[in-house]
Image (cartoon, rainbow, N blue to C red):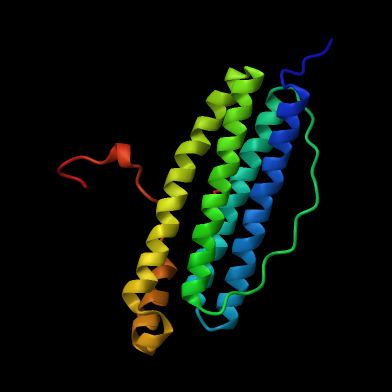
Length: 183
Ligand code: OFO
């Protein structure tokens, strides 16, 4: 008896998303290693923690395919991009990456509509919300380094930024959780 509840196209697109999330983990890992090499150990640990978050995203998709009776097919992970030139460009690239991942999630959601796969559409709404938060998180990184003045500002501001990032969680509150007394 065939218990697969995913169409061929849907399963292929979800498997591609597994690769995309694994690629994202690889990018954060690589930028973290670069940051550590530059002496930014707080930023490095922050990026390593985020690499784990990307792997969690990957596992969510993988588990979903299994739970729907589909077949998981892992693919090769691409080499990470070249190292950034400085922390400003590192955070800028992270922002661009998150926007591009959001676009991939939107393509997946569109595919659910074409395939009339409402279960997967419902599953993906978590990712739609998560990507809104991931974009805000990356936007905040860009703002932080702008405020610190990037490397031009001298060592003190970058030292403080690095120290603060060591304990930063990377979690961003959803706009829908905001209230007037708790903005
Ligand atoms: Fe998986 O959210 Fe970032 O890429």
